[in-house]
Image 1 (cartoon, rainbow, N blue to C red):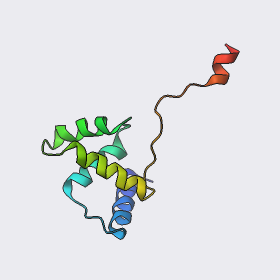
Image 2 (cartoon, rainbow, N blue to C red):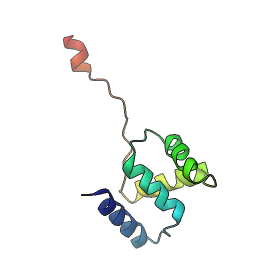
Image 3 (cartoon, rainbow, N blue to C red):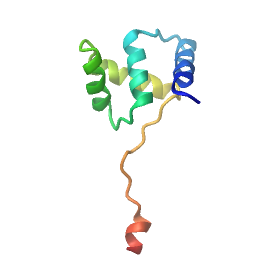
Image 4 (cartoon, rainbow, N blue to C red):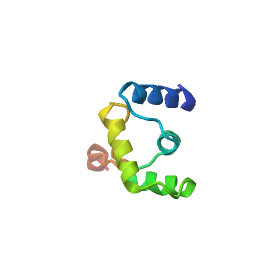
Length: 88
């Protein structure tokens, strides 16, 4: 599925749940889809470069909304593989 198709699906699902699709929310969706961000602060810094009026709270609310809708999952970017360490 292309990035644009994913974005369209996410927007459609958010609209179904009664969420308004603002330009800031679209920007955040774009950043989340295109960049591998490890935390909300990283998303915020990338978004603030494009729209200085965006706030940290907006990022946290959007991530929470996406999580509650089942559209995003938080994953640890770093993992320790204990089996690989034990065999070394």
